[in-house]
Length: 174
Image (cartoon, rainbow, N blue to C red; front, top):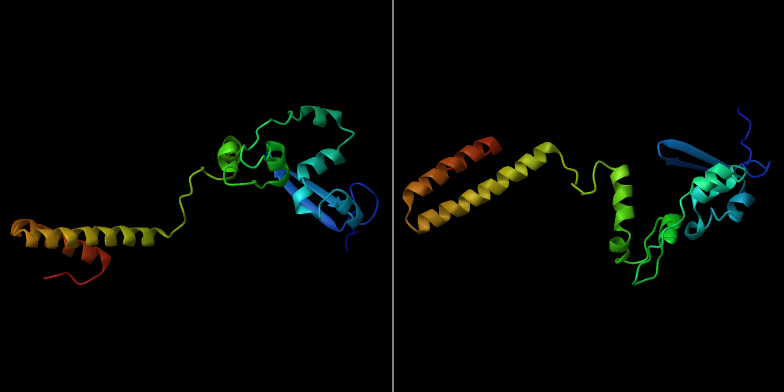
């Protein structure tokens, strides 16, 4: 059995283990209960893993100097700042989405394949939905053609409905 991990800030046994991936680099921090409380890890509103990682590497002045100064974006409605957003990962109000849009868009673009939510559905379900929608359109067109006595158009609609139903796996209309 492996020996217990030591706290990165003191020599006590680590009971809190944090992992963050930044720029495809894994950063792990192991803390004892006392240091975790002191750093605000147990308080979700006051904890920033990036600050903790920088604090653990306090001897490394190059890392601290490489950090860009915080921007001054501020939500006009709730007063939430960019620094607060980066620290907590939460927004203060719905208007914050507009205020912090460049930050959010950049983060989403890095985390996902794009910034538009496309949903998730099986391909066959999407195809069935498309065929069902087409069938509904054709039935409406058929009804309108019959109502206005355009029988040639109605026959074309009926034939196309039968094709769609065969694809859809239903009995064709007669």
